[in-house]
Length: 73
Image (tube, rainbow, N blue to C red):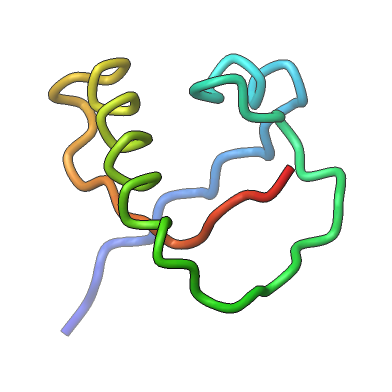
């Protein structure tokens, strides 16, 4: 079975392009190490609040919105 060729990968985004796509004041680039911490019972409510903000900003374009971690300040 012959498959069509795969599309060419898009070039990496510039910092300005990443900043334009960021939602909610998030830094455009990760500038600090990522730290893994124990579960917090408050995370589900933080996720619901952030999910509502993302859906309000993106509307129907935000098909799935998944929680994968929590940023610490």
